[in-house]
Length: 504
Image (cartoon, rainbow, N blue to C red):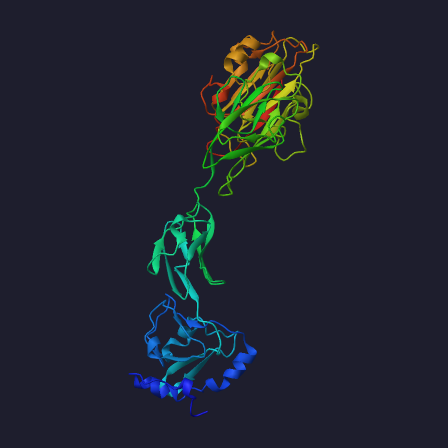
């Protein structure tokens, strides 16, 4: 094994190092019969890739200094020995097609420690056909949309080669041009990743090569619900909020979006839930006897990005409310049912549940409301009530840790949640049934038509249903209900200790 056969005899080369190296390489011509018995004929060739280039020294001057991405074919029954500095740690040889660990014996890589050199030996079996080869590489193989890539190729023993891309790109299609490199700019939709396969296919059977490049589209702008509004009947359009409306009212829901292409109506409100909607539009809903939730979800099908769903509760005013009441309550606020702090539940829609009868014995209740809530306590003064009855309702500082600003609106009206000053005055026949309380302890006085005092809310105890309405707001007296703003000095809850004093 110390004297290689004639077909493997190294040709004299200029580099002395290679001559030294070849004396350390085991001859492979002697094992040629094993290759022929164990392996099918292969078209062996060597080709370096764009990512690595080493000025190889070769036993055949025809392969000396093979440059990056140039194919050199080995003829049948031909041996070739290549050498490179050991500093490349073998990686250079892995860049050469033909040296394939899965086809053992086609090439042998030896390390020569004393010369710090790697040696790669090729041997082709006799009788193999003439080499036909295509090499194709891309650099880089992962880019952002709009960046460029270089496609580099080399060919030997082939003709009539065509370029193919999938997905198709005009820049990589048709006959293979002269030269060996082009730059192209593949793109991807915003928010998506696209993998392109670039191929070269030639007339010679089974001669082709494919590389893949991944293109990442730009980040998609977020889908957003830019406006979501409610309008009750012919009232003012307001930003969507939880609200209470009357049965039979028309609720117009309108919305607009950015970067969405469609929306879906979700929730439980009849007439709304389940509808497919445009990205911008409006929809009228006739309010039935039951309320429900209104949810809006908007998406962009191309990017599969969805806006955060917005959800609101629609309540229906209780039955028995006179039709002429309309919507004197704050249209986007909620009628509270539990307003007594730290006690067993008392239904705050009923005066008698809170104060134990009407007008009730002298009693004090720890009363509170949360933001955008109001109270409408129903009561029916029986006809047996004396015409000169007197009741004092005072609102004192709370003693249980919830703040009070002392600013609230209190009314008596045949309509629940009636905070419309003109409406209250017209229905009750006096402007004293609307009180804008401006300081703690200020009392609200009510009584029969014969009760004393000129600043008392007086009404006939004739069995008519009435409501005590309370809302916390710092807005001036007479502010339209639709424009009322929650007012509790910046706190989300407000409270008072409410005293009911029945004079007689």
